[in-house]
Length: 176
Image (cartoon, rainbow, N blue to C red):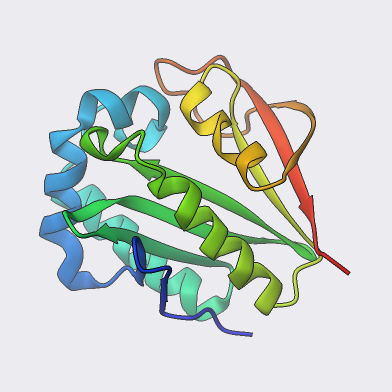
């Protein structure tokens, strides 16, 4: 089942990334490079138009294949960050990032709640959230949404400067 192109709860609106978001994406990431790059390898050594174009192109391909549904997170203040819902066998995994000025306002929790509902709509049996164990901001989100911590695992992605290389793994089962 294809992903919904727009999801909203009235405070955050998730919009499928489009090519015309390029300038906004690059400006948002580069304005928060110290914050985003500390935790995410793709921004650890900078972010530019080429990286933005590559991400948007891959996002379009993944959307069409049903492998990932990547969204821009918009609030009343504009682009706040990004999130995604990735297919993992019969489940889904949520990933997210926020620009520094938008942290601590509940936007990722709201965006993740929308993604969980979308995962259930798509028929997923469970949803995962994984984050580096040092990233306490990211770690605050899963318990707010009823996820249970199920363990830790070595990161399979390249490490960003603040990362330990060990991810906390959270799981939420589909309600009966």
